Image (cartoon, rainbow, N blue to C red; front, top):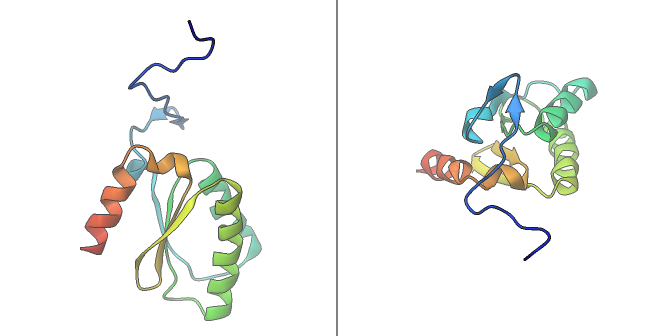
Length: 114
């Protein structure tokens, strides 16, 4: 008998705003980055840490603003053992490692790239 066992096939999913969302794709926030204001970037990081993957489009921001945003979010991703995927020119997916477990984000990436 093991002290710590995990029930096979059962995954506890977080509840967001009283609505149980089954997949990571259902929680994705799509945004076109137009500013590098600190409050805005921190709000994006908070969403990411709260289990909402981000698909961010950096086409309408200058290189310095894009670098600042990517650098900050890269630190957040590193801290929560997440991943960054380039899914298009100047379009990136930021997500925690837990968000990839259900397989829907990988499917989303493959569909978007094809």
